[in-house]
Length: 68
Image (cartoon, rainbow, N blue to C red; front, side):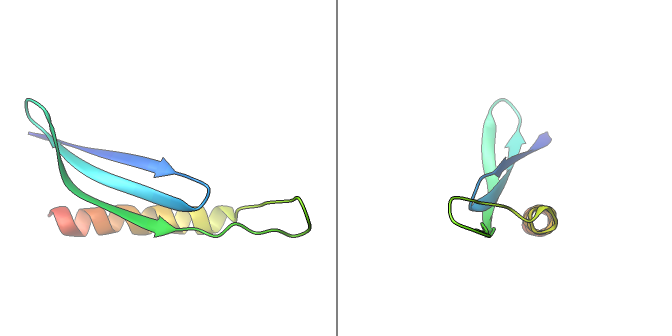
């Protein structure tokens, strides 16, 4: 039995899921953590890299806590 973590980093949220794989994949747990998009001036959009990293680690820790 193996576990697989899938991560999707989008423009407004980070999603992560944990799957268990034996003969096929079965979803064990998934979650979403929202991230902010900043507009310092018109027609500009920026992300904060630290916020993305913190949200990613928060999402993976939530997966780990709910799977174990």
